[in-house]
Image (tube, rainbow over the protein chains, first blue to last red):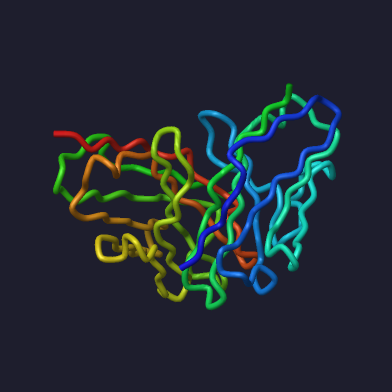
Amino acid sequence: NFMLTQPHSVSESPGKTVTISCTDSSGSIASKFVQWYQQRPGSAPTTVIYENKQRPSGVPDRFSGSIDSSSNSASLSISGLKTEDEADYYCQSYDSSNVHYVFGTGTKVTVL
Amino acid sequence: QITLKESGPTLVKPTQTLTLTCTFSGFSLSTSGVSVGWVRQPPGKALEWLALIYWDDDKRYSPSLKSRLSITKDTSKNQVVLTLANMDPVDTATYYCAHMGTNRHFGYWGRGTLVTVSS
């Protein structure tokens, strides 16, 4: 099995850009899709990015996703930070044979 | 409109088997490419994927919990049932069911149900 490791927390001021990394222990992140979920306190997660960089309808283009094969990691960037972006964010992927699904360790985003 | 709702006991004793039901509407689990999964979250901790059942009755389980988990579906009732055997206090968590479509992300979630394991 594999693990997805995220920084525990990141913080930035309103209007700035924050980037969250998600590192794949299997070394093959380029062979699978990564999703990103936002979870506000007391609520279920919602998708902000799927298939590495796709945004569901209703998600603002301030949210963007990318993959970096050289560092074997995925990233979620949030530009023009707003107080409403303050939440926990989780990456999620699956193994190459689509047998197992894994969530990342989660990152708390604080908007100062 | 897709909705999902979890139901089951809020309190179970150690060693008991937990049975949770996910009742959904707005889609059919007999439609090609559709699946329903279960995810849990201990208080203050990260999300953990548990199990997934596909439209064709294929099933997937978390390797760390596979020996204790079972997932089944009743297409006619629009329900998915998860059982977790030999419950322990560390299994205390909010349990969510979620819809996964062909783009393989959990696009719709239930509100979750908190299950506490205590004697």
